[in-house]
Amino acid sequence: MRLRYLLLLILCFLTLPACLSALERSGSASESALSDKMGIPAITSITSISEARQSAQQESTGRQDEHQQVIQGNTVTSKSRFQSYVERATGSSLEVFGRELFSNVPSTYAPLGAVQVNADYVIGAGDALQIRGWGMVDIDLNVLVSRNGEIYLPRVGSVQVAGVKYRDLQGYLKKAVGKIFTNFELSVSIAKTRSVQIYVMGHAQRPGTYTLSAMSTLLNVLFASGGPAVTGSMRNIKLKRGSERLVSFDLYDILLSGDKSADMALQDGDVIFIPAVGQLVALLGDVKKPAIFELQQKTSIADVVRWAGGFESAANLKKVIIEKSIDNRYTTIAEIESDWASIEGNLAKLEVQPTDIIRVFAPGASPMEVKMEREFVRVDGEVKHNGVFEIQKGETLRALISRIGGITDKGYVYGTRLNRESVRRDQQLKINEAVDRYEKDIEVNTKQRLASESDPARLAVIANEQESQRRLAQKLRAVKSEGRIILNLKDASVTANDLPEFPLKDGDMVYIPQKQGVVDVIGAVYQQNTFMHQPNRSAHYYIKLAGGVNTTGEKSEIYRICMDGTVRSNRFGGLGGTVNPGDAIVVPEKMKHGTGLMQGLKDFTTVLYQFGLGAAGLKTLQN
Image (cartoon, rainbow, N blue to C red; front, side, top):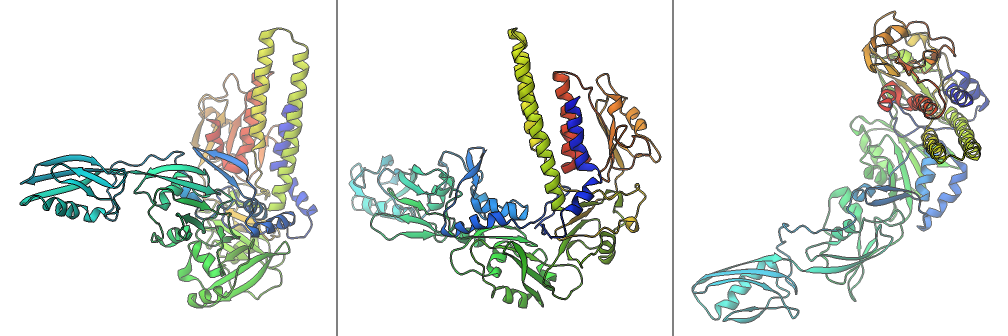
């Protein structure tokens, strides 16, 4: 029973309106800022993290630590210190621009045998040629270019072919044979290209020696080696060939404009060196592709915005707000209101510095006078105008929704989500503390049971149960709060005028879902399913539609996850009342010792997961 109450305690922290009082204790300081994109229904926000800023400054030297390793297929990826700093500071996990190019490369290189030979390919030792001649000569040969660059033709002798381009090879051989014969035709093709040995050094994902086709280019060997590691540069890749000068290769040329002009063909013995990554900046907000970018020279905000694909609505852009993290606070560094050409020109005058975190907005609200401290809220979903809006000091949820035009006909006010970063952190802390206690109880309980048992069969059962409990603890550890504030709305009949006069804060996220027409029934019933909503029906009506509670179900523990974020049960406020569209009814398994206990905890884990995924996600996890 102790574990049951532990999990119910976690549920309370996530759902009950008590989080509002915890919010007031957080003070009036603006602890969070606006996220670059709003996930639906999981929402994140931006905050300034003072502790991380100092460590991020070290990125300007190009030195990075690798940590948080994740294995994806055959490719090992990890986050740099700057990536982790940006994630903590913004609440968004930004990728390094261009890294996805190498996200699914194979661990070994297998050259394609059917690739057409480039006309500029230079013949060399090891190439296999197929030569056919007819007329006054009868030739059908497969010959290998020797180490000294020659091939032998019967009745003609040795012919030097090394260094001849493939486009010229047929005419070159015809001329050589023509010294002996006349009135003939000849064709030549490359049956198999030679191999070259290439050395990949420095900050590569998989440095080492690679044997590739002689038709390979610098880009091919980068793919073969997995590309630059998290500590490697994307913009200053070096090609060293004998005593020749180092040649630099910038992957941004290909990523941004498809320019492969610097992609050189490889020769045997070439060395590819990937130096440490250069200076980095992060860009997020109303751009097509928020990311972390590597600087190579003096760079403006206009350049970085272009790298990110530009603004989402450049065609109608009339106003842009640019903010930068300065002394652990986001500060407006520019506010441009003009035609697009003038906006672009002004952005080109703003230079970025290493480790900058820049966010750009194209607000949809009416122009407002510039303030020393700006506060923004993102509104999305079924509203007349969505996007990022600057709010006035003390402006309420109801007032903002009214100011931006209200809610569309499809909007479902009862399901309104208001998320706040300070609430998320408080909830997450309590979840983590509860899971810590649960893990400690697992170990203590298992030791006590093992000490009192001597039967090998029972010892094996206890060990298996302990492992199952540990896996469940890991699953609970993955639960992430979203910081939802319960608005205490009455039922599905509420309108925008019923929204509370609740003051908004910088970084708040508001989402209005579409109207729902279904009710989910999941858990220990005979047929888990989604049913059409019927007016004025209770939870028991929908449980009957699902075949009723099965033999393993706990009738006294049935609960309803309401669309407004609350949970109704006999233990918390009563299960009775009318079920609203979008609600989910959950029938847990009976709580027993051993494996039955684990099944009960699994159901509670599913409930916790739904706070990030909604009722539809809860049903998916349950199946």
